[in-house]
Amino acid sequence: MSNPITITENAQKHFANLLSQQPEGTNIRVFVVNPGTQNAECGVSYCPPEAVEGTDTEFAFEGFSAYVDELSLPFLEDAEIDFVTDKMGSQLTLKAPNAKMRKVADDAPLIERVEYVIQTQVNPQLAGHGGHVNLVEITEEGIAIVAFGGGCNGCSMVDVTLKEGIEKQLLQEFDGELTAVRDATEHDRGEHSYY
Image (cartoon, rainbow, N blue to C red; front, side, top):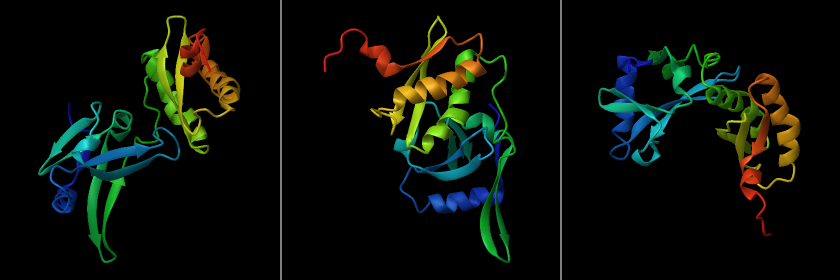
């Protein structure tokens, strides 16, 4: 896998220097917030060993690694991190030309395309309420099973949000492919709920 991210020599030195002051084993994480939307922002943070996820991709640089989460990865294609010094001082510059672009191929598996719309369109709307939704699975009947997290969990408006907002949006977007959107908790509750 070639490295989609360029970290210039100056920036590599800068990171190596910063990391030398951090606990042993700390690396950096490069990520995109709100990928695929107009508000996409590229960011860098420290990544201690316990923060590395199994789905992360590791890119090795001299003296450190950069970890990228699965969702950010396609949006960091051709990204460049530089460390520029001018008379105003020094600063990191992050360019991610593809962060705002739609990155899921039209012929990608349905689950990827649905996940993409949830992450880039649905979740930014829920974020204002401190909630988010994750795609759990898509059944053979074309039912997308989603799980609410954060502030949505146990919120009495969840059903309304799901039916009026998310389901409508996803069914419109994936007309002919998705038949319904269900809440995983409702899905699990089934017949045997004791309160």
